Amino acid sequence: MPPLPFQNTQARGRQAEDDALAYLLLHGLVLLERNYLCKGGELDLIMRDGPSIVFVEVRLRSTAAFGGALASITPAKQRRMALAAQTWLQGQKTLPPCRFDALAIDGGHISWLKNILDM
Image (cartoon, rainbow, N blue to C red):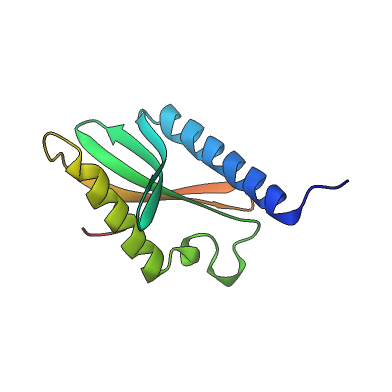
């Protein structure tokens, strides 16, 4: 019996997050949390880059057509990311400097965009 389409999508998404994590680790970031879920939002990766906390959104598209992976980070998605980050930060003892990054994987090519949102 062949896998259901959503299973293939989930597997590709998990692999994209694995690839993104490996890429960021190679660039010196440290993983704090993966797939953080809260009411109203989700963060793919929470990393430390020196003194800063980095909330990373991982997006995968098979091609860069139609704007590619970055175009899929809609204003609604940005609001959910900000809400999840605020919720995560409420659990911290001190408020560290933080930023939102995106790791876009278009057709196997990785692009890392830093500071994509203002919070």
